[in-house]
Length: 114
Image 1 (tube, rainbow, N blue to C red):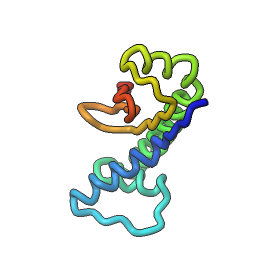
Image 2: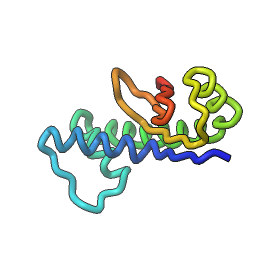
Image 3: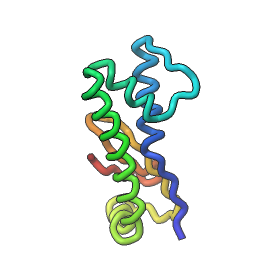
Image 4: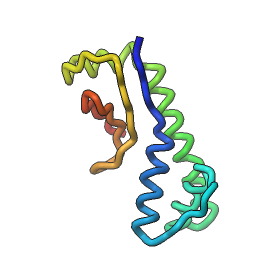
C-alpha cells in the first residue's frame, strides 16, 4: 500500500560524519555505526559516558524508526494528509538536525519534532 523509506540511524551517522569531517577528524574505512557513534561522543565525553551516549543514541533512533513504521497507517499518514494535503503513497523519512532533532517526511515536508 505505502512505499516507505526510513533509516534514521544512517541519517544520523551521515550527519556525524559531516560534523567530524568539518572539524578535521578523519574516520577510518570499515567502521561500524556503533564505532562511529562512539568516536563522535569521545570528542566531548569520557569513554564511559561516550559509550553510554553512543549506545543510547543508536537505540533511541532504532526505537523511533520502529514507532514510525508501526504507526504509519493508524496515525502518521492520516496526520500527513490532514496537515500537508499530500496524497501520495511514497514516504521518505529522514532524521535531521535543524534547531533541534526532527524526523522529516521529504515528499510532504511533514516534520516530527523529537
